[in-house]
Image (cartoon, rainbow, N blue to C red):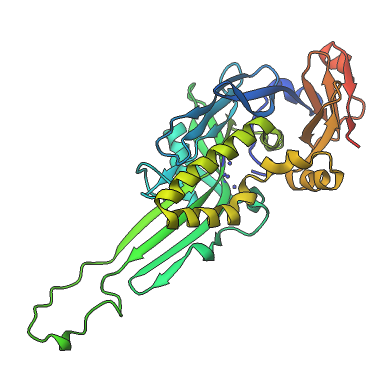
Length: 369
C-alpha cells in the first residue's frame, strides 16, 4: 500500500478525532457507499460525522480498463481523513495508455503518491505487507512473466507494503500520513551488443564495423488502488484505520459489471494483440486472486466454511444487523452495536451502554451462524 513502517501496525491508521477516544476506546462508524456513475460500487464504514467525497470514475487514460477511483472521507475540520489513491500505469504497453513517471520500487511509488497529496511529505518508516497480496512473501518474482534470451531480458515482480510520512498540515501543524499499496513492476533490458547477436567480424573482414548502440533499460508497471490515511502527529489510530479499510467491499452488482467490462476489453486486446492478451491472462491467473479475492466471496456467502476462512484472511467477523442482513466488521473489537440512528459502535467494553454514551437505544449484534 507501506496508505498503500501499502500505508502501521495492523493497517492504515487514521482517524477518529477526540470524540472517539472519549467513547470508551470504541469506534463509532456509519455506513457509506461509493458510487460508479449511478451504480453502488463499494460499501464500507467511515467514522460517524465525517463527510464522504468522490467515488469511482470513468475515462482514465492511464488505466487500461478506463475506470479508476478518487475518494476521501474527512473529519469536519479536515484534520483527519482516509481515502483511496487511484491506480497508476507507467511505461508503454498493455498496462497503460499513457506515460507516467516510471518507478523502480514500491518505496519510490509510495513516496511519489505521498508528495502528490502532501507536497512536503518525507518518508519516516516503511514495511512490507504480505497480507495485502494473499500472505505470500514480497517482493515476489513472477517467473512466468520473465524473459531471458540473447540481447533481451525481462524481470517482473509483485510488491506490497505501507509507508508512513511526516508533512505539514494546512494549519502548519505537524501531521502523519500512511499509504498502503501494491504494484506489479517490470524491468526490460535490451542489449544489442550481447553475445550471440553480433555477426562474427572475421566473416566480413572488409566491412566497416560501427560500434553497437548502448544497452537500454525500459521500466513498466501498474499499481492497485492505494489506501491513504492522515491525522495530526500523535493521533494516528492504526487499529481504527485498519477497521475502516477492511470494511470496504465491492457490491455484487458492480463486481459482475466490472468483470464483464474487463472481459470485453481483454477480448478486444486479444483480437488485436494475441501475445499481450496471453500475458494479461497469465498475470490475472497469477496475482488476480491475491489482489481482488473479495470479488467472488459473495458467491459463497452462505457457505459457512468459506465465509469463516475469508473472515480469518481479512480479519473480520460477520454479524447480522437489526434488519437481518450480514455486515462484516473488524474483529479487533469484541462487541458490535447498532445504534438507533443506523450507525455502528465497535468496542471491547463489555459494559458499554449506548444510552449513557450516545443518549440513544442500541442493539448488541450477534455473529452470523
